Image (tube, rainbow, N blue to C red; front, side, top):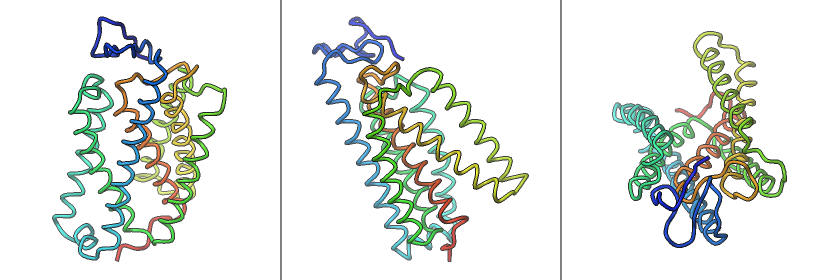
Length: 254
């Protein structure tokens, strides 16, 4: 939770009455504008990802480049590295994620890199699996967003924040152990289910931080880039886990 005051214009006060203390907006219109901005950015990210995935899936030249060319393999590892670097930059450096236009530029680069990774993963699956995972993702995101806005229970408390973080780190460590050491098929399915549930909770958690109200922890007015990034990662995480569950290891990499 961020603490701002009138003497700190870089962290919350914009001189127009939209003073933000501890993430709370005193100006209702300012909160609404913030929500609108976040979801506009998110929709652009999702559209870019969908278009890139469709392009690589339907164009045989792009698919061949991604799967079988040296340039495609180099691009894959470059995008993986950039995705990690950009996510760390946007997550760990608060001033950077709030400084326009650098925050938008970094988010745009992250979205392009992540979109390529999503496209690369999708071309390994049958179209029916992708469409099914996409449809279920849309349904889950819609229902959980409505739930997060309507429920009186606060998922943004510190215990939820710490609990989700610890659970996510633990299950990711278990996933890596199973991938490189154990190689147990049913265990990977269980892990994917757990990760899917965690991303669902993270979606509720981030949504409540965006809509504000009486929730304990909230995003401040200048956190629109980080808020959009958080929702985007949640949604992509849900989609990828569903894709893995519905399609196994994939079967369309010819």
